[in-house]
Length: 187
Image (tube, rainbow, N blue to C red):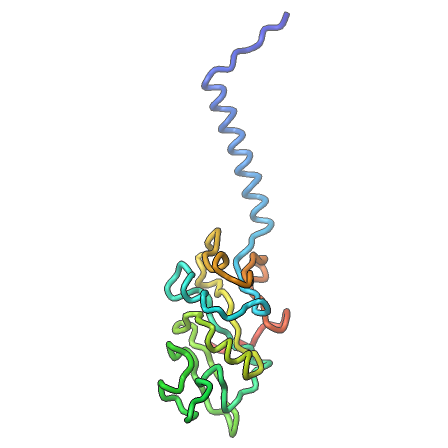
């Protein structure tokens, strides 16, 4: 008759520690193979404004970008000016952006270039919504990966009514409004 070895507390703890170490090693190896980050799909975004209020960072890690290859360089840019503005100048009452994050630079009549100052942008999406309604749709929102703290459960994603947030591969952290073509971002 074989005698069963009694499992004492020390043996149990050693076995549990070895199993935990093996599990952690397996999990770390698996997560490295599929690193992901949170990103906003500009084609699903409804410009609800929650990106500016639900991010754990203040100001939000969500910023407006201008995809210049589809920008019309419009004289009357509704992403820049309030719809119904009487004047097309840079007076505060005419600007749509509440933080003056968009700069208009004259190129030649009647064309202007619109540059986003990301440090001022709060991700409110007012310019994006107006550009989609009245313009070419070159303004869109993205989570800036150099600012984002990469929360495990993105608070904006939880609050997003259009489910526009998802995890994307860290090797391709941005989603562009026109597919895989990166925007010509001017900083």
